[in-house]
Image (cartoon, rainbow, N blue to C red):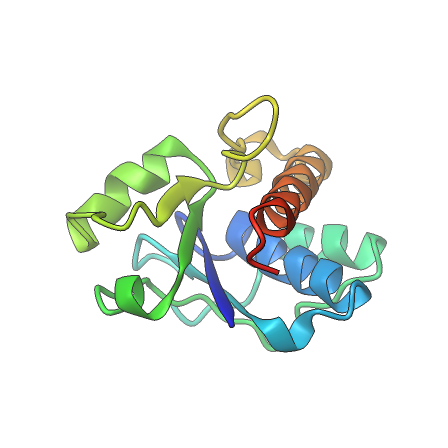
Length: 154
């Protein structure tokens, strides 16, 4: 089983969007039983809060539900529990280092690391552009899934 944890600052926009986009992608390929997919925050600001309404609406526009998801903070033990910790941006990686200071297995990467144009996913909380965040996350999830297929992990 491949265990993936998507990470952003508050776990109410980008990382839960990635969680549900990726769950949908693997389900459509009949691979759900081969994955554990979740999301978390680097901060404590939003713990227990549901997915931010504009992010929920963007997911719903694409037929995806995030019903029941509430924000949680990443824990140090998550490093051992997951194979990949995929962060929305470099800033998240920097904050993650306060919780998980070392990455000897090179599990901590940006969501768009496998893209032909690796970059950060801008925070729609500040930009208001949930459509762009959605398309960047889809690109990140698709290229990550291709990486897993090409490397023989699935």
